[in-house]
Image 1 (cartoon, one colour):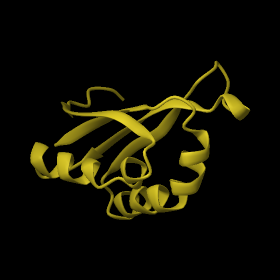
Image 2 (cartoon, helix red, strand yellow):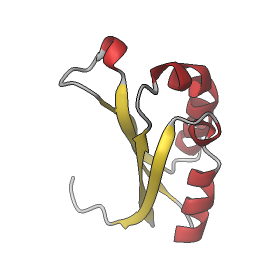
Image 3 (tube, rainbow, N blue to C red):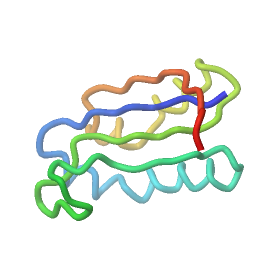
Image 4 (cartoon, rainbow, N blue to C red):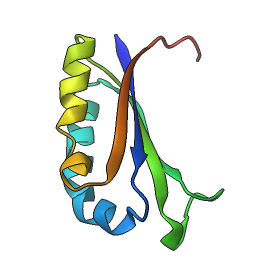
Amino acid sequence: MFYAILSEDVSNSLEKRLTARPAHLARLEELKADGRLLVAGPHPAIDSNDPGDTGFTGSLVIAEFPSLEDAQRWADADPYIAAGVYSKVSVKPFKKVLP
């Protein structure tokens, strides 16, 4: 089943994000290589693909896991958590309908 991992950043998270980004992306690449990643990306703080110094307000990952518990464990191990980027992370089952 797919699970949506919705994360919210702390204020002024950009520097922390940049430091932890390589490790964060490496985990996403593993999901992609396993064919389990549906979509992943950050939420820009402004209405722009390149928000510059305004940074991001959070992230969304939708990926396939065997269970909600497995998805939660994966989310809890995100390098952005260890780096203090995220203030809150929610994991919810996701039912893909379209496309």
